[in-house]
Length: 362
Image (tube, rainbow, N blue to C red; front, side, top):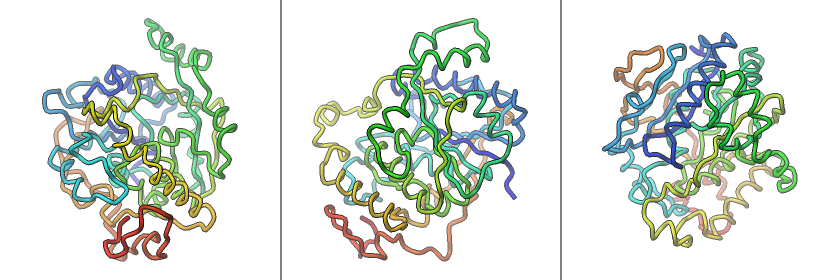
């Protein structure tokens, strides 16, 4: 029996990602505290934050933010030495290593997924705000384990975020009239695939057991925009999609491009050195997604210890908790009867890079 009905998962660290990250994160926390409390959902909800490779010279998240006292919040810390070990798991699709980038978003999300206590899990981001109607929808506890839930995001104009002395309810009422672009319109014009994949890294909700079945997000070291889409199609092998529409909404707080994450100026300015700009990698992902949709087979190559399941790491209960470190417990045990990914078992050859069946990875 799950301890919670819903686990919300975000990732981050105190590195000023996108400029003003901590302000955006604090705003998300404050509004989430209000909406969850108003819906009477606090006892059935938890927020898990993976703090990946915290910067040495900055305060950790537990000390840098004001934590709402009405929410169960856990910060799972992935220290620098664990981050550095990720480079030993490279695949042929990877050119980004732990020496190049300090943060692996989707391995961080997997780390939280494997430690979630909720019957359902929603993966989102630290600068995404859920409106009251969406939280009320969660609180009804009518989610189906047979479905994936997706929702489009709207990008908030900066001016509406600068308004002060407004109640949270008034802020949320203003948001729909101050959006920069409705993602649903662009998606309907540009994407024809069965699954609704635009900005899927901002909202993916389904039963915990389905996340376990799909093996979490694929732990490629490539651009996140490719991984979230690939992960969605892994999930689509097992579940049908429901696309939530207004008045259920999520809002993204505008910031500088994610490519600011790359500290090395040569790498940042030379696109050819980034895996996600290589034509053969894009082609592989395209073919793999088409194969999954056509054949209903999961091509996620993750090994049995995905989500750092074999690592001993700590977490910090904040919010309702006392902020003291405790061991972080894996709630999805490492499977004893693990079967290798179909990407190996079926010998699927999806153009370059070729599959290495001896190593059981790409």
